Length: 498
Image (cartoon, rainbow, N blue to C red):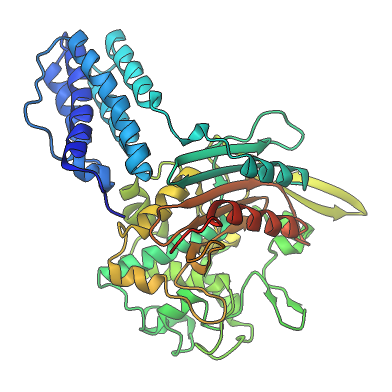
């Protein structure tokens, strides 16, 4: 996505952001005005994304010697006006502008003799209020979405958050509670385990390494990971597209209705509960899958298998020589500033704030509901181990589709679906109810789940997080699918073109 702002509009943004630093400099003049201005300016020039490209160039004539009162009278309305401008003309970047200005203000504040003076703290507060004073889409009346959220709670979900970004700006809402039987609302930017949304991150990282010339999409995986004795016909592309035919180590469902178990996954009931703190090595998950019959000849069919993405993780680690979490930070999380996103490997905890996740099982004829918010995610590995927020998922999918993470040819490859399931490389490509297509991946992870949908240009997105009671029979599945379709229809079903 590109900016359609005029040169004057872009100058307005520059003046507002850089004069905010000037205001902090003037407010901190009793200490080191130069240091305050320098630290804040570095933060502005380091900003990423489309707003970052605009703010990297300082407007001419910015002065640091004016009085605090003069600057405040000029800067605070300019910040409000800039936010209003972005919310009308480029709503997907409004949050980036706000975040960039506050990072610069914070950098300036922290450099004043090692701590914030009262006047600097007051200026920072006023700047924040000015940024938040601009009207946005959160005041929209979206009764159809609120109704769907409440129906989700009525159907058995504990809590749900929703974030919609479209031509009206950003709209957020929550329903339900953070804890089963509790009264505290589910946090709008709470951390959840995003399950198979991890696959989109993993595929993006692999494709970034393709862009760096370290991996080739149509090279046999065995060339990179010879120790597993993989079928030499299986290519990197087949891993990312689920066309390898490899057995799914979390269990395989067959067309005749039979199920072949793998490790004790969440379909295993009490056995998963008993193993939820166990550490699984990704190599062992792959070897278990390879001990089972393949579903089909490589490249001849499609079947969703977590095994593919554990191999993708091992591929990343082999060609870079670094843990997958470090590469995810280098390639995606760091550049996009995804402060609520991380990739644990064996760590059991989850950052606050977070809604609680639950799992139901039977023992000795008695039903038990257990809080499983903290557990060892190595059982799913890079098939679904990441943690994120609805805000970060929006930032990620928007940046991905805007071409900020991948060159155009690889992004096109990623969004080209195979014929059977409409799966590209780490994303599903499906028809939008209003016409055109949607780029999506959803995921569930032992009582947590996340939704991620976007139009191909990233101009409209829907991201959501859920917490609920999971169980071996996936009893929330029908309610989830129904609510999911209702949300898609409500957000994308009004003549949305491709």
